[in-house]
Image 1 (cartoon, helix red, strand yellow):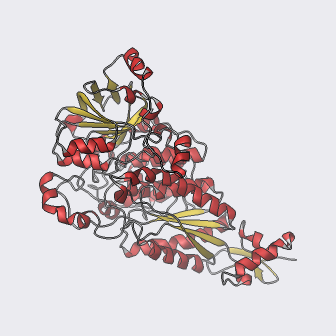
Image 2 (cartoon, one colour):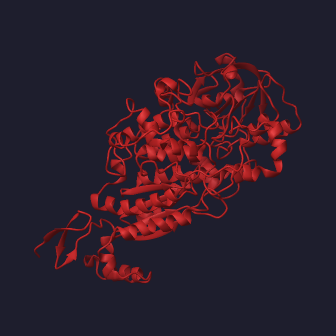
Image 3 (cartoon, helix red, strand yellow):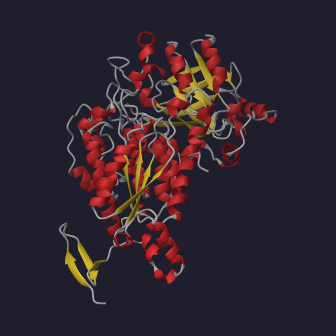
Length: 568
C-alpha cells in the first residue's frame, strides 16, 4: 500500500496506510502480529481483558511505569500522585501507560536491627524484578519512579540492562520540621537531642520525600540526573512542590517521544555518562554509598569502574557544595540555586559534554541553558567548600582493595589520626559498649563481620555513628567492613575490603593494635608487619551467623566485594 506523509500539530512527521497512523512500537507490535496465529489471538484476548480498546492499542506505544510507591516509607508514599501525572503525560503524548509495583525498603526503619541486613540486597532484587518483568511483557518504553537509597540504584541497574527507552522521575527531598543545629543541620549534639527526643520524627521527616540532606537518597537522585536519565533540574524539586508534578507529566510525554526517536538507554548510560556522575557525586559531597552503586551500574554495561577512579577525579574535582552533612545547606537550597545543571555548569571543563540525556540534547547543551541563581550554594571552583571531592578511597595493609570515607564531613583535626584498636565482632557488640560507656577517647573502633558476605548484607551502621556522636567523642575513629548512612559525619571509614569473612586483614586486628589513618595521603595502615598479619590469619576462622532460609543464603554465595560494588 502507498504511504502518505504528513505533519501533526506537534511538528512530527508520520506515515499513514489507509488512513491509519503507523507508530513505532518495537515490542508491543508482537501482540497484534498475526504471523503467530493462533497464539496471537491469545495475547490479544488477554490484552482485551484489561479493558483496552484493541484498535486504539494498535496505534499507541505501550509504556511501563515502574512505581515504587509504598505507605511505610515517607520517601515513597507520595509516588502514586507522581505516577498519576506520568500517566496523564503518556496519554497526552499518544501512549498507553501500564503501571506495576516495585518494593521500596526504608533504610531508616531497618536501622539497628536484623532488618538492615536485607536492605542492600534488595537493590539487586529490584533490578532483577524489573528486568525479568519487563523482558517478559511487551513494553515499548519505561518510566521509573523512585526516591530512596536502594530503589534508585536498583532501577538504574535495571534500566541499563534493558534495551528500551527509559526516563526517571525521582521523588525529591522532604522538609525537616526543625534544624538540629542552627549552623549544622546534619549533626545532632547531646543537648539538642535531649531537648528534641520526643520530636525526632518531626525533625527528620516532616513531609513526604527523601530525607532533606545529601544522604544516599538525594545523592542517587542527583546522580540519576547527572547520568542524563531524568529531566534537567527535576532531581532536587521538593517532593511536595507543584513543579514536581509538572516534571512528572513532562516525563510521561517525553517517554513516548523517546520511543518514536528510538532513544534507548544504551545511548545514554555510557562510560562517559558514568564518569560524569562520579564527578557530580564528588562535587556535591555525595554519600559514600555511591562507591557501591556507581560501580554496580558500570558493571551492568560492561564498564570497569574501580574505586581508584574516585581518587583520580578527586585530584581535580572539589567539593563545591556545603550541603548537610558537609555544611549548613540543604537539598532545597540546591534546588533554588539551580540544581544539578548548575553544579554541572561549574564542572564544564571536566565533564564529557557530548554525553546524551533523555531530552535528546547533550549535557553541554543543557548546562549552557541552565542558570546558577546563588553563588554561595553553587560556588565556582575557586570558592569551593573543599579543594577536593567529598568521598575518598583509602588503601594500605588494612584495606588492600580499598576503604571509603566522606572526607568532606570529617573535622580537620581528625584527617590524620593514630590510635589503639578496640575490636568488635558485630555492630550489636559495639552498640552494647556505647551504652555501657566502655569506649574511651583516642580509640579506633573496629567493627568487622559486617561486609556483604559476613553480615550478611553489609548492614548500615547509623546506630553506631549516632551513638558515638551523642557520646560527644572528639578523638574516636570508626573502621568497618560494613557501610554507613549517607548522612554520616566524622572519621568513619567503611567498605574495608577484603572483608573479614573472606580473610581480609581486618580479621587479623586485635585490641590494642595501632592503626594509622591519613586521609590526605589516602592511607589506612595497621602497624603490623605483613608476616605478623599472615601469621594471625593462619589460625583465623570466619564468623558464621545464622541465616534464615531463603534469598540471603543465595546472596552470601554470589555477592562480590564491596570494592566491586557488591554485585551478584
